[in-house]
Image (cartoon, rainbow, N blue to C red; front, side, top):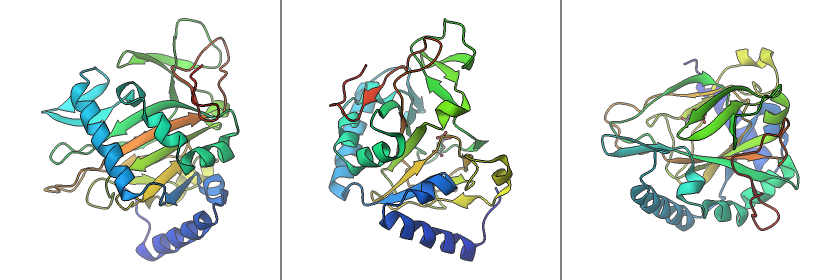
Length: 264
Ligand SMILES: O=C(O)CCC(=O)C(=O)O
């Protein structure tokens, strides 16, 4: 993976911090991502992590990804822990999502990722282009590559729809150079030319730094370093600014943030 030199990276981080402290959305628009600090207190993060742990242990569905007794992910986390939607609604993340995507914003999919010690994984550069839908039976000119993942139909979405989406990542553990951090290419959500920009490796403090990013932002992550005991748990929440999909398609779930969370 290409790396930005340390001085440039620090300047970049300082600039982001200044932007976010004013709740400016410029960073998100320009770079395709922003770090948001102090969204949840440590106690709240521990409560979410504990509830998640209990739910993942008791849920024995194909949507939970396990390897040698370790849970390293879950595809449909809202099915496993539906109260997560309330956590978002009661937090400033709801306001952020509404500012970015408008009043009709809803949660459309929640994923969970961990890199458990000894069972870490990596992902190559990619953009998030698939969405979960109710059915892939009807013909469509808007959607491509129908597939079924963990029992849920998915399609590749058109760019105009992905541009109306936002991902919020709640970090339950610190993320640093040791435990397979996420890297992004700033600006790559907007223009192919920006694909050549230097990647930035993102670090997060345990509990107090969250990431908002556009799905079309190119991102990748590395393996944790050998012998590292730290987990890297992330709740990955995808939101869309519209409940309506073309060609008679429907979101697999759409939990509105601004009308008490009623699913459509
Ligand atoms: O969390 C990571 O390291 C990668 C997650 C990812 O690939 C994704 O969000 O599409």
